Image 1 (cartoon, rainbow, N blue to C red):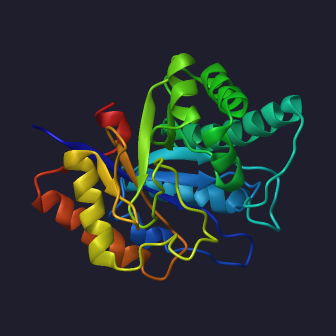
Image 2: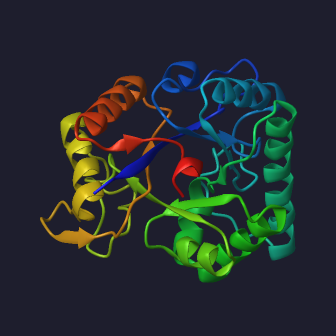
Length: 257
């Protein structure tokens, strides 16, 4: 059986003179880039540079829109009027799409960021709002979202291709939801274990919780690599190398969805 998978990473999160992430290095190993659109991180020159680098590495380019929350890095939950949120999403996705087009690259996908991502995973109305905005911009844009969530269902109902995401360095609960970052066991600390979890979910669709329960997440299309940790580059290298040794094809989403 042929198994294809994408490796996605959040990037373009620097701002002015403040540098965050190791984008130029990690782009050697990932296949899709979720590029900040200025609302939680990034600014026009950073976005422009990141789009250019991603395209040169033949990495799929994605918009990574968030709530308007620079100070909180998009991780604070906000109550936003629906019409305002639609405008926020169109503004961010449209800016990224235009940057990509000017460089001669298509917009491959959209992945919501931070608190907006987590809320849309469980809130059907919010998930449908995001999916409908994406579909109105382009039905060929892939909606990248956490596996088995409201976002996946909303994307499919909106006629979008969806990419089911797995976090190999995060723990899940017995319902297949990510443990809160505040939980003592939220993170998978050992790199070898995170790599093994990725292979298991791709071959068997199974993730094992900290309590030993086996949860079926279904088919996974993409694995997230967090771009703002010190070990990002080495982890991306190890993960891709191990996947390819297992005969798993690592490629951008647009090449197999």
